[in-house]
Length: 164
Image (cartoon, rainbow, N blue to C red):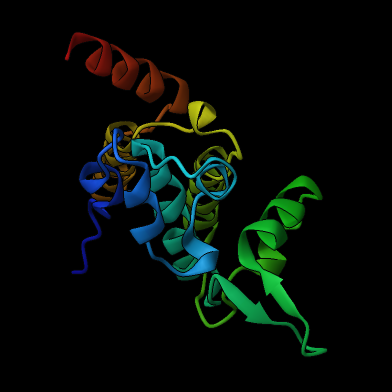
């Protein structure tokens, strides 16, 4: 069972040393667009990178990939477009078989991924929210008699974050 956790970028970047920003390295497709514009790494930069990894798992494509015509494409941009046009199924990895229940979970996860891909870091959820949300989906899958209510889960998560 693979586990992805802290990408570590935001915690190692001292905010008071501008020269450090030139040392940040990463693969273009995973880097937070806000960081690319401002040079500032935040905790929400890791949220963006996590969303890209999730997209790779769902689509079977790399963050930057070549389309059928050989044109370089950005997976995040393509995914956002497919979601806006309600064509999620077209971008998913076709080697994976999705049942009715799992497809609904993919839609819910995709909505969270869209939030994580926000150009503005302040509009992205926290990793605590994402972790708790995904754990709720796992629980509902293990115990099918438990129905996950996304609004209720979000309210519980927000209450948990506010109490910390």
